Image (cartoon, rainbow, N blue to C red; front, side, top):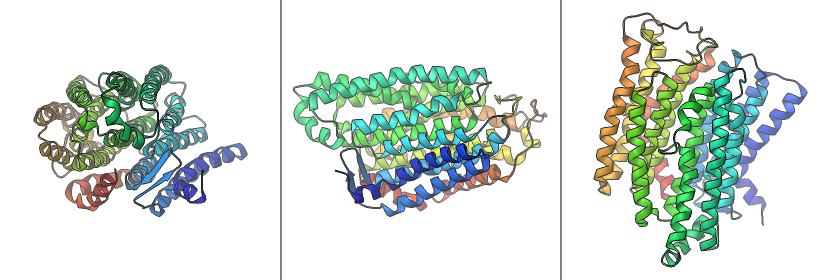
Length: 477
């Protein structure tokens, strides 16, 4: 039974849902992009502030949700990333000849689904949150319908997302049939007693579920949708797919894996190790072959999933902390990279290639610096956020002697370094850029990029500012 206290725990999600409703009412009364932008920012800010009133060891909201420090940290990360993407979208949408109010509505609904996922404790809330997150993305990917590649990307995403959802549901059914419950914590209590009598069914259920999970994470071999969808979607939505969509699933999967003591299931460990190694090598190797920067970042994001799986496979508090910290650093660097690309993309040049940015440093030095810093962080160079993220992963792996995975991580990161260097070197070559880039819009995007630069450097130079919060979040799992 839902009580008033339980409703208070859900206030951040209620705030985002109310923001979507308010945006629809506002658009029905009078269309105004500035009003829609302001309502979206205020709603997200309100939801973020409300998360600070829920700092408690653990509270259950019916069987569906669990509010703890881990879930609250996940909500804050999702809300901050969505806030940044809304800031990006404001300047980006001004250059498009489209009504933009529905864009913000769909984004808020998708954000609500992500929030549901990070505090889920039940298969039902897991699946409903996933669908609420995913369905608006079908429209957002194809939002600018004049672009044929956007429509193509949306159709691919719809078909593959539908297939992966079917696999996910079938896996849930098999586990429910064997264990008789859909709550994560109760599944964990019944897992060991039922393992001997129903091992095959449980392994099949986990395998089918992993298809849905790895599709959303774009891990190999369920990654083929990512480069086409990243390239075809509007840049703010590409940034959303790379951060919020992927991050919400990783936060939920870490909770599910930890509560079910996945480190004790040898077959699951073997499967995840195989997926991690494939994702690290194939992601970085295919990134080497790309000329389009959005496709390069798509394949790069596949490799980063592999890195996080290495930390997850450590199976202890340090491993969980490493996953969370790496998510934070990955969010900062990825948003910085896509924010910089938004200042380069125009209606005439919607797909920025490495050749297009040749010599860009001599024309736009600050923007080139943002791109270089983002790539340095993604590859893990010292004094950037990405270096500390990889350091935590290596520390977690060493603590559990995961030497084969760590060797693969180091070797694949070297391959990824060369992929990023291709862009970095091109920026500094003494030649005028091939493409005609648009004049920089108003200061909203510039200020946001400056904040992301500071965050990327601060996380690399002074990571202690957030590590205590991360360790507290990991400890509540």
